[in-house]
Length: 408
Ligand SMILES: Cc1cc2nc3c(=O)[nH]c(=O)nc-3n(C[C@H](O)[C@H](O)[C@H](O)COP(=O)(O)OP(=O)(O)OC[C@H]3O[C@@H](n4cnc5c(N)ncnc54)[C@H](O)[C@@H]3O)c2cc1C
Image (cartoon, rainbow, N blue to C red; front, side, top):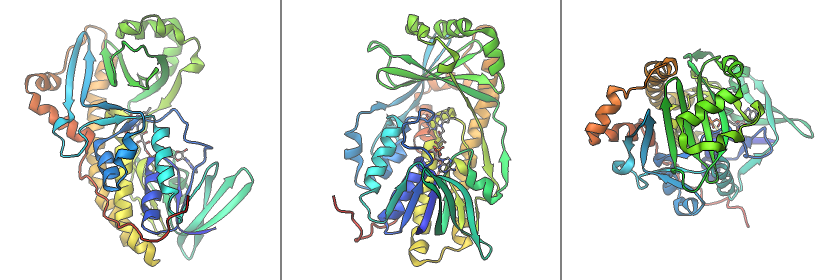
């Protein structure tokens, strides 16, 4: 197979980039190692800036016709107090809310839009295992499929294969580990219609639980200190359930649905970034270039913004068959500042807030910064802006190619 761009990884970064490049007439293949998008271990947040991109692509109404929930405020429960921490209603975007939708629905939507373009190809169950090199530059990928090994030649390879990126490892790019002090236990508890809606963050003495409303169940992230899983296991499942029940009383007996540790998955949190995101013929974006903490639920936003910037900068050179290292460096220059700013905020929240909260044994008090947000509601626009739009929002600048609509 020969394409202008081969993308490893069909997550938010890879799928959006594939769609945008195909829309611009570039021949592109996205290789995704799983058979479908039905994985659990992803965030479900579609941010106002992503909705803005969908609007620019002319598909916002079609997207919002899919079942979703709209979150207009960031709320948190600390001890017995419920606090409003962010207010999206003043954002400079058409949608002044975060849409909560299972990520597999979002990725299926992107896939169906992308497939309308004749130059778009998506290969599922195809795992990138190596890079092809020629004349000192990356010239394609080697992938494993159910039927054996395949080789793909490409003018550009993009690593969008997430925080354990095989592409960046094979390329030998240098990773700076920023040391996340937390891990997450990922579990489900059923949801009653009378429960609150949307995203619910809960903080008590030594416990942090974030709950994502997925309609008939809560997808929960139970935050633990890094490496603390053995301690959680040693205390026993009954004690684990009791801690959740005490923190979120409205869950009541439904906590007993957690009958076995196999229903509680450990997700290791990584925060890192590449020193250089590229080498000749290769670029990394999304978590492959900068793994994000779940704090703030912004990693998907950043991944999609990377994809938009990459398409804006590279669609022209790709179409002309001339992608220079300087073009690739422009992508990093464009996206490095937003990444650094958000990672710095995430690390500050890890260190000054989450770590302290997890170490705490007595009554939890509301930190001064959160108290200020209650006293001066205008200040709530700042966290809403960081989460909803981020730094340096991207807009779709690549024109749509007139040719190449796939029939049917
Ligand atoms: C517990 C947890 C909860 C989170 N919650 C949120 C949230 O609510 N909101 C938010 O915005 N962010 C959240 N994040 C962060 C977010 O998940 C990531 O920042 C985001 O998914 C990055 O998107 P991506 O496309 O770069 O990578 P990914 O989403 O990781 O996608 C990479 C894709 O590449 C595929 N792949 C991997 N290796 C290969 C290979 N060798 N060949 C082919 N395919 C491959 C994977 O199967 C995957 O589909 C969370 C992170 C964690 C750990």
